Image (cartoon, rainbow, N blue to C red; front, side, top):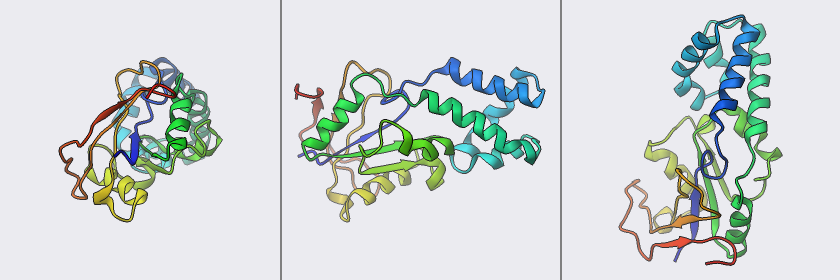
Length: 202
């Protein structure tokens, strides 16, 4: 029996807008008086740092004056806030899972502004467990980030069942519910795998 479903955030519950993200980087570059393409390349090189820790160190690593760091964090936060909009059917699916007594978990590889504004978003209160890479200092595919979610969901992680929503498409509200995952991070053979077809269509 499925006890919980584990979701990704970007391109699953929220569509990631590449062009909007590039526009935010261009705005940051303009504030610094840097060439946008040069800044984008440097920004990409610090991705791992900002996805597993605070934003400020990844900015100072680019040689940015500390006096400007907070302003750039605010630019980044505003851009992310505008993107943190649920895809069609996402909220309905999450609510339906909750009504059925199925626990809902989220693991997101993201920078700190996502965690900072999470409680402002439409997703507030819809997850029993949220794990943000920037907070825990771990990123996918490190199995420890999944174990964080499992151990948070239950005091007996060996009995936890988790699923993932598709990351390449969202054909209406759908998600996958799968078999158990062991506490060693190895996925066991699925037991009773079934497709979640959305509210009222299970």
